[in-house]
Length: 239
Image (tube, rainbow, N blue to C red):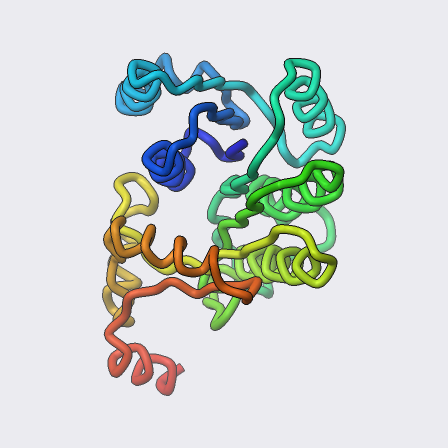
């Protein structure tokens, strides 16, 4: 089960799972099957997997709602499908500094999908014997960015969920991701900001190799980033 399932990150991870032998994917996103009608590239990827014999279900899911997540998991059980893994990749990039955040609503849809979604998936999947529970976090949880206060806090929450699950003997891995060489993942302006501070795009093979290594390690959180570290350190010292 991949949430944010038709986004660039989830689709890249789904491809890795298919290559590793996955035969059934459930791609869950807020927009659901309607996305395939307007996104030819996404529809083409799904069609390719199906042509290779992979069962791919595309469904609409607001992962920030506990009842919707519960219904989704219950439907999988009714269909006789054992849930073997979860990849939580839902959550948009909310642009806001700390001074712009308030108690009522300023946290945005991206925050709710990321944080509430992780909370619901964690709680409602505990009866399943999962092989993996991956949370797509970000390096913003580690060093923060001025304009991404809520986004950084949300990712820190994912890290904490993974650590808690590991401490309780459950599958859990939070992937603190840096900039990735995946089309459609960020705007040109965001990429330019990261260029300026020395954060380079990590190529997909390197990312997947890092994830495989992290999945076999004891740590609950893995940081995967490609950087010009001297430039990055200079930038941080100037802040």
